[in-house]
Image 1 (spheres, one colour):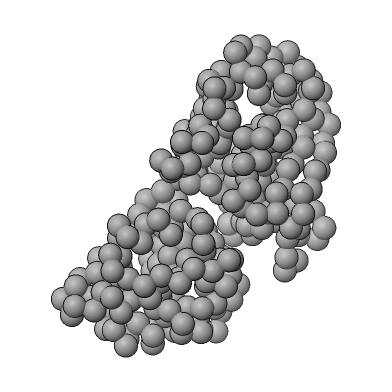
Image 2 (cartoon, rainbow, N blue to C red):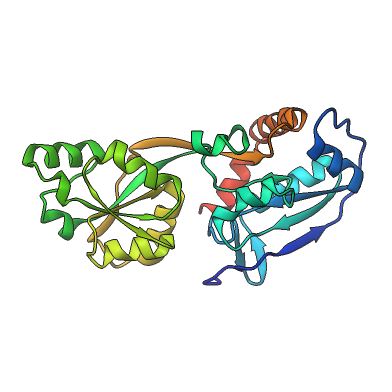
Length: 274
């Protein structure tokens, strides 16, 4: 499996037959219809959702994008900014029509874009270094509640060290769920995870799929570091589109409904989450 994903802006093109679409008052949908193409933004390097393997970009989001383009009867352009945090600015600059990726719909992001109904249900999980955790009595903890109970009882909350990927949603949860903890921010999720393995921090918090996939690929012989079984915060991913495109938003909500009812969500996720 390829160890890296492309970090430059990439456009991949697929042609399908066009069909008639009433774009209503949506400027984005009007452009899609007139130019017979859709520009879909995806994550540049998310092994489960959008990544390059054997020279091809693959993942859950790529399959969803292909299904959407086919349903609309337009050409598909996959747009890959070289940083996750560039996806929303690129959308707002009209270089992307819709973001389909492992993006959590948050209140802060909703100030800038509109989100569809949930396309994927998940949660925020904890990866724990048991020997490092033992130093503050949480080495055998099995949940967020147990960690918090121990630290509060011992008065050692300020000794907890957490790693996060800088600029992503989990960072904003620390003041809510881990009040008083020390935060170490990293430029990449892999760096944040490795810091826990190396004993630089007690725990990392991140989304379910990254932590479980990273653990599977990197912790096969390391029982000292574990991903706890339950999420401490339920979450979901959603598609994002530019504001003032209600007709397009309505259409995408129906598209997501059909992904579920026609079994595409289950089929695609099982394909990439083996």
